[in-house]
Amino acid sequence: MAKIEKNAPTVEKKPELFNILEVDGVPLAVLSKELWDKICNFPARPDDLILATYPKSGTHWMQEILDMIQNDGDVEKCKRFPSLDRHPFLELKFPHKEKPDLEIALEMSSPRLIKTHLPSHLIPPSIRKENCKIVYVARNPKDCLVSYYHFHRMASFLPDPQNLEEFYEKFMSGKVTCGSWFDHVKGWWAAKDRHQVLYLFYEDIKKDPKWETEKILKFLEKDISEEILNKIVYHTSFDVMKQNPMANYTTLPTSIMDHSISPFMRKGMPGDWKNDFTVAQNEEFDKDYQKNMAGSSLTFRTEI
Ligand code: PPS
Image (cartoon, rainbow, N blue to C red; front, top):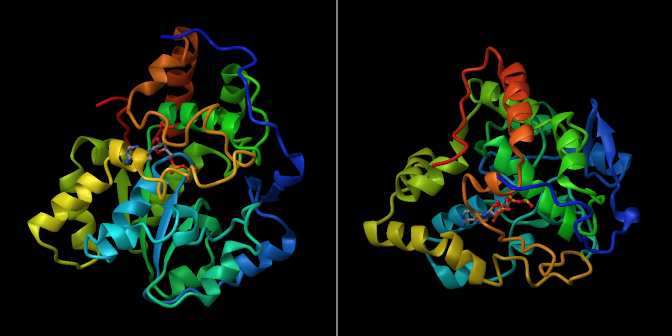
């Protein structure tokens, strides 16, 4: 295991973009109270497909899989726009866009695919009322923490993480955007028993993408040929997505995301946390994990 890197380089920060609004004790990347009110009143449609994740859990990977499914494996159609412009992020307003994604969603025709990092108890009531299908992807917290740390280094709209030691404390106490990883994964785990939620794990998709994609197809009641299934698995693999400008975030200005500091498509590998965690951090983490997950039937693999 590695030593902690002190004072790792970061992109120039833009504090005016941090815009953290705290809702129910959860820090959210929501621009204003006015936008939050609009989110709460968001009119979901019954055929909306919701993709929910804690940050750095494989949102864009699953977005690509779902887009490929919805477009019957047509790779060119899935390259129509960069990921950020293809499907809206319910609660976000990106610095390079004129309006919040929610307003873009309101103008979109059905069926819509809508992404969100919101915890289950904060999603707009209409999503439940309309019984929308929800795909939730969870990732083991060690890799999630490390990925989130490096993302804070390269994204100008997130605060300076300083070093992994500092960020570790913030992540474990839920003082990062979207709050506690523990509350998020447990909240959605409970929600799956009350709503149409397909709860998937990043590590499972990495281990057997074909099997997991078949699960998604069943959940979406969609039939495709073996050939298209193989095409989806290939097109959404880490190495292919990393080379795809429509999926790897390189179309954004470096003042928003600086890939020379840390690429968005960074490692994509379960167990990468071992390169950043110290032995002491790992021991402390395991103890905290036991405390926070006591009584939960949820289990995670921290390597495959
Ligand atoms: S975000 O910014 O919160 O929406 O990020 P998110 O898309 O949820 O997660 C980014 C991490 O997912 C990895 N990724 C992938 N892993 C495996 N296969 C594929 N195809 C793939 N696409 C993205 C990405 O590399 C980030 O993880 P790390 O560990 O940082 O590499």
